[in-house]
Length: 242
Image 1 (spheres, rainbow, N blue to C red):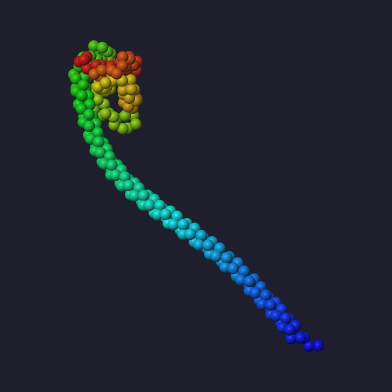
Image 2: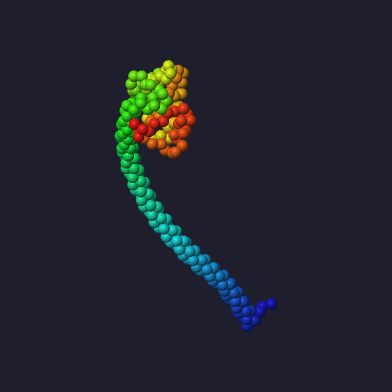
């Protein structure tokens, strides 16, 4: 059966309206989706911008840190230079000190040499006076009669080596022969007494049958030195005895 023209038009209008409605519905959905996509892109862009800003801020912080590091390195370099300069100054000062010490050592050696010469001069003077007066004193105090003159000389020790003897001579008593072995000390101490025994008398023990030891001094270091020497069998005379 055929539709009436009026009914066909109504059906066509309904179908057209439905189509247009369907077309509009699809377009709105897609548009909304597109808007969501654009919104998402905008948010992502904002995040990228923020990330870029944070990156730039971090880079600026790193740049500042690098500047501080470089400044610190320069400070350390300057400090190192100052340290090296100070070390050079200390080395120069040490060199001057060593030269001064060397000079003082030489001067000290010369002073000791001069003092040694002065001590020898004083000692020789004391011995020279002893040579003159000991013969009389030994005969008066010990009954020893000196034969010949007293002198400085060398004798051979029991080990075969030469020993310098400051006061050397011969004497006799009641037919008994003695060898006088003496030494002068500007200032006599117990240590000086022991050195005389150790360095001279012990090395001559057995070389001469009878040794008569003598010490001559200007003064003693303590009151008990005189008795200490006499207890060791050593005759002691002072310069004021002459």
